[in-house]
Every structure is written in structure tokens, then in C-alpha cells.
Image 1 (cartoon, rainbow, N blue to C red):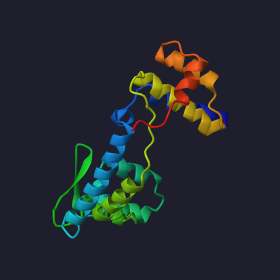
Image 2 (image 1 turned 90 degrees about the vertical axis):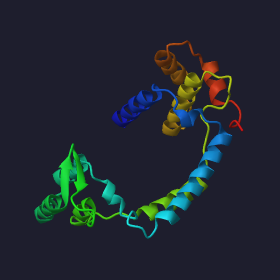
Image 3 (image 1 turned 45 degrees about the vertical axis):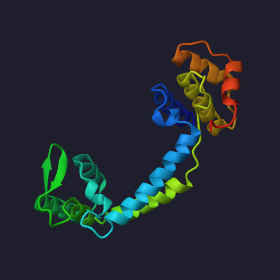
Image 4 (image 1 turned 60 degrees about the horizontal axis):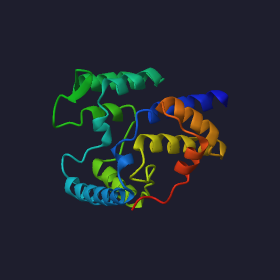
Length: 203
């Protein structure tokens, strides 16, 4: 338990220390609009790509040498690995660490994965799923006030949420201490409480 907590905390701080990304800085209203566009465009692309030669299995994009070698290290069936090596040699060439198809008329790397029983959905199906997921996704806004220092707000609120998810409490005091250290500014408990309890998502 302690190891898992400290590993999670370290990973969270490392991520938060990079600062908010563009999505985090986007207002709640614009997030909703963007998700609607993603839903609509992914559905349109699914309809456009369905039935074409481009509507291949997603395994056709699992072509980096790292994926293949990692799988071979973990797979215990020698016969299947021989089949994988055979299909790699027959249908693919490795260029700069990435496998490319030798012949456009075959599935190439998808055949390689099929040889060891790894199959994936077609792209049109993935795009349909993406469209539905985007339509159902309910975004939250970590940064809610335009006047805030976005880096401070993002770090404090996200770290407080980490503690709340882990312990069921926001742990304002610890959040204030850690935030002060990594942001290199003085942050007291009152500031943490104010940031974490401020308003509704910005419309």
C-alpha cells in the first residue's frame, strides 16, 4: 500500500509539474463544442472509410518494432512465435524500427498479429465507438476562473483531487505544502480551500 501510494503520488506530481495542457485551459463551453465536433466528424469519417481498402484492422497500425519484440518476449508458445517470425519475414520489412508492408495487396503487419491470435476491430468500428464516446463524455474543468494563475489552479486542484480519490479527503494541509514546494510560491491552506471549492465550471 505505501509503495503504491508513493509511486502514484510521484507520478501525479511529475505530470502536474508540466503544467496544464491546451485541453485543461479550454473553457467548459468550448470543451462541449469540441466534443460535439469530434463525435460528428468521427461518425462521418467512419461512414466514409467503411468498405474501402483503408478500413483495415487497427493491428495494421501496431507496426513499431518495440510492440513486436515485447510481445515475443512475453509469449510462451514457441510454435506461434515461429509463425510470427515467418510472417514478419514474408510480408514485412523493418525500416528505422518500424515494420512496413512488403506488398500493398496483403495485410502485412496485421497478418503477423493474426498469426499469433491477436485481432482488432476495423477502423470504421473504432471511429463509430469514438463518436459515441465523445457524445457521452461529460468533461470537467480543473481551471474554472479566468483570473486565476492557471498553473497554480491546475496543480492545486488536481493534487487535491488525487488525495480525495485516494483517501476520501482533500488533505488541504499536505496539498498546500507540496504545491508551495513545486510551484515555488507560498500557498496556504486557505488558498487551497478557496481554489478547490471555487464555483461551477466556466460556461
